[in-house]
Image 1: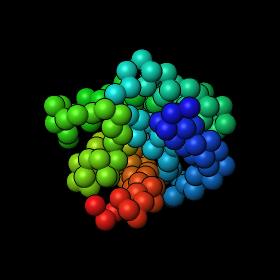
Image 2: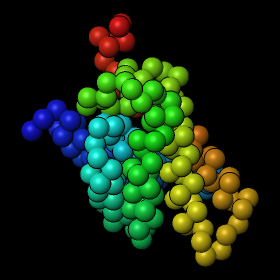
Image 3: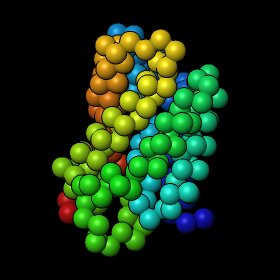
Image 4: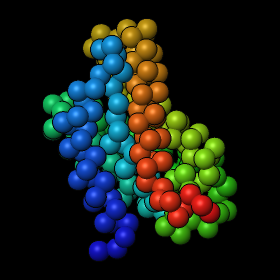
Length: 173
């Protein structure tokens, strides 16, 4: 098994149960929910084809839906997130970079570009989740409040994970 597949498997086995058991219960003011498991999808290598990335996203979202009892909301949002992953990446990184197995990270992109990329991806994901959840009785103020507060909360958690995943040797470079 190559390093990328092993890393994805480890992230999947750690983040999905953590999301279902811990992070779904860390709701702030009955509004903001951290959706930390999307860190795995945000950091998928940009060389993955759209079909492979969307399949991984759908299966990840479906697993979270099953464990969290949310009927298809995360599966849809994760699939959308994986579909637009590469174009959003190229908004902040030049398209002519050598992207051989490059994963979006603090080390590979630099802090400023990764932060912009991560905020954009989290905002898109949170907007998709709360738009689908609120289809029946749409309240614009609640939608905006939940989307923005969950985006900030999730981004803080994802940034902390990204900082923890950079080893000491990589920080010195």
